Length: 308
Image: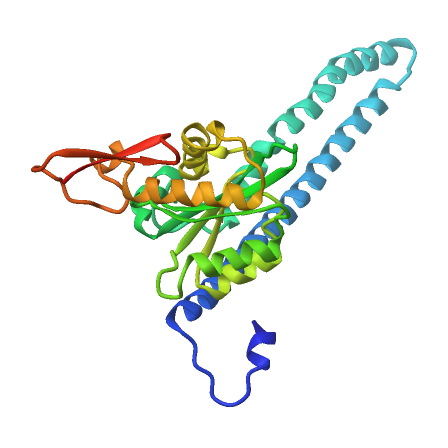
């Protein structure tokens, strides 16, 4: 951010989304610094207690070894023998007692110095999706083989509120630069979502992260090995496979792009969704009068029924 601001000369105007992105980034860095300070404080206290109990264990073990090594003869010898036998077992057991109470005492001592969390606990992933659905989009990549056994990569972006397929495109060589360019083309400056869900694919590199921050979009990567957290994009990809690409022999990149764009129009304007009350993502009126006519889509793979 300092490099961006330093390159500007004269007066500079920032949009509300850009300012929000900068402030969110600063807030994230402050939270990370606070968490690190809490962790280091607790770690130092724990290490100090660990050293204390370790010293006690060593001391008790040494005393037990000394008494175990006592040798005497005569009447005093029998007395020392009984003393040694009586103290050896308790002293050796004290080390086990100290070690067993180590973690309990350390936990209660460290908790006293830790900052208490204010307010209610953070919301779960499902609650987050339900509360912020109008401001969330999800993106993902999937692979489509061609007739020549080449692999093409299709990139999709879907909004969670109306399940509308915002963007779909195809490439044979996906890169971070290509993904960043797709984000610009998918979202005009006044239509960008507040959050964008993605998986942890390494293709979403630093260039994609910078593009998201510049557009005022907060990055929301899913947890490792948790595809269910990006369920909207995963289900959309499953629908595209079952209802479209699995029924075609793909000849190349241009062919696949033309097929997917035709399916995207069908998906957004015609295909019904039970979660939307059997409406399409782009809402359409109910036609109650007229004779029914059908129009073939994707060569007759799907049909659009209308009243005329």
